[in-house]
Image: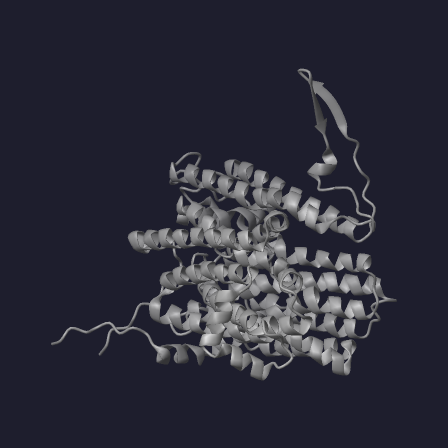
Length: 603
């Protein structure tokens, strides 16, 4: 008998996975996730501009982006709370479908409002829409992790999700502008709303995770009884840790609430500033700073950039870092057998209350995460913070670089970044999905990080004239191709398009691998909370880094910035290699919940 050889997966395996019912719904949900983000944070500003809404008033709409940045704050609700009228749909669909219907209804309602004369309703609905969209994202990410199996693998589902998301960005962005120019903004938003309502209706038929795989729908007595078994930390001790987490999350919710009230024009009284001397040195206690109540701008509203830059790190500290440390202390206490329920101890008289619900929602996901990964969590958080940081930061400065520094026209930038660029990202995602299937998750993750880092050097060349990018474009015939299909462009359009194409291909490969890796390390039982925490870190760190990057651009120019971001990207490559080594060495004990699908032996 000859020994069976392991065959590497190929295009047939990818095609088989793409034909799964779950994959089709994943593409649909990815589209539903990307469309509202594009409409609320991009296209809406074009409508408001045409309606001649002044810039100061438009500034309030930038606040809706905070819903996406801080979505992890309410992720425990999505993970553990049921919606009575929808709970029969399934653990995740009971949140996905209603949010899609709400979003569709909001977009249709916006289409019948006049932005200039009904701006109050307009801003309120946009804010509610952003909250619903962020909530939908939490549930969809958890659904993807829950339903993945050997046929519709997590790697393929993650890739297809991003393809749907990017396609929606194109439909809601560039195509939205084109459609609005022909039929008008109200009709465009009504059309987009109808699309989301249709997706919500179709979503009713999507599969959902098995109860035993993703946790039961709604807490049962058995769930709470787990906390009172022998070896579990006693409730009195456990609750002391819980109150610490409640205080931290409560403070974060309070300052966000105060900020939103002030941003919408509401009045929140300022506290007096206390000054005193200690050992000859002047000291100040400013409760306003502790609550994020910074001076209002000229338009009478707080600055969201200042708030995010100053309070963002503290919110991360209060809702992620410190709770993780608290969870680690609680896990160690249990592992050491301190203050635990003894074997044979009668716990039948214990009743389940509100603190048990809060413990289950807030602390248990963190205890599970820390307990499963241990000190490896430090490496994972470092990789999360660095892998996509360049993309997250750079997005804000892309258009000033194209339009201001390089002096391209709006049409040229739209062609290169929107039409050609989005196509390159989708192609990169498709290639990334194939690489995940054939080469494996960690190798693809590492290659993606390396490619994304090196593409910064392409932009560095553009910043000093683009000599090498122009030469490469000429040699392969790309310059002729672009001049043929875009005759309106300048002689520099081919090198811009060439650079953006390679960058977006790298972003697609890296994005497919990153989402697949991130999804693989979270527990199916606590997917909503754990994934939201990790993904929000990427968004927040990008927001926080923009101020420093903007200052560096102003002082040293774009070339030095691109060289710096290249080195930051190379740090992510080293961390990828370290994580790959850790997983290989630890094997089944690496803490990875969804291992890579092994190649099947040949017959």
